[in-house]
Image 1: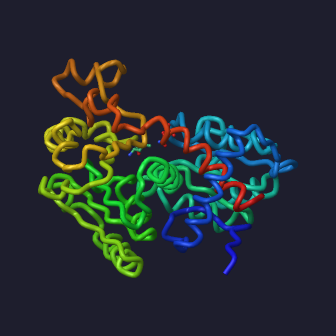
Image 2: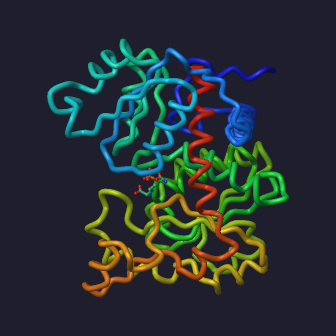
Image 3: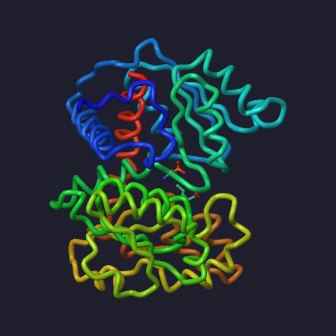
Length: 331
Ligand code: CP
Ligand code: NVA
């Protein structure tokens, strides 16, 4: 059956079939090739989109802006300081107003319920640009990058997420892997694994089974064997900075190192990271934490800069995949 995503929201990959995700990935490959070839179509000419950011961003904001502008759409950016949303106006009223002006709405913030409420009330597609429990546009970029660098089809790929196994990236990967029949391992300390929402895991596991994939949670380094990709993220997500001391204590054994890559037994194992990353002490946050005795690097510079690392291709692919989501839903 032909895939048609016009008018659809993009809140979580759990809402999409494997064929629909395949369609968005194929469209992203195609749009990337067209951009490289200098082919301009302006398929969004006459459209306007708005970007709502309650948390900071480099990649997601710029990816939405460039993707929209490449295709001829207008873009408005609003952060929480410069809009009324939530303070003087409800989420529902904000959505109803923005839906009158715009053809699509991107939201980045804390609760998944906010992006869902926007979607219920906007009357136009709403795209999730990250919440506390999901980051679906990131997964499309990660999958595109794996397809570019790994000879295997996605349903033969084993990916190990090493770190805070109960964060938004880990859940987002669990959903994406389940849909595409991949082998996903959430590798982290027992203390954090105990906080994973098992209802979400069971829902993903049921889907993974249908698609020939599997979802594992492990604290045992044996789970690294045979991995095609290792994935890292910061140890304390936006809004969790107070938890850094405890996270450093728990997650230091899960820092991605050369030894961890070697433990996969796969010299070509890819290293992926959603970015931003602490891989040295050259940021204000990493150096301030170091002064207080905390090494917050989730990956060594050696791995981050190695030939296994595809993190900047991955960052570029945010734009091509986000463009695919916008074009598929409002183009
Ligand atoms: N990976 C990602 O979402 O990056 P930003 O926080 O810079 O948008
Ligand atoms: N887990 C990170 C992802 C950033 C893209 C955060 O939420 O801060």
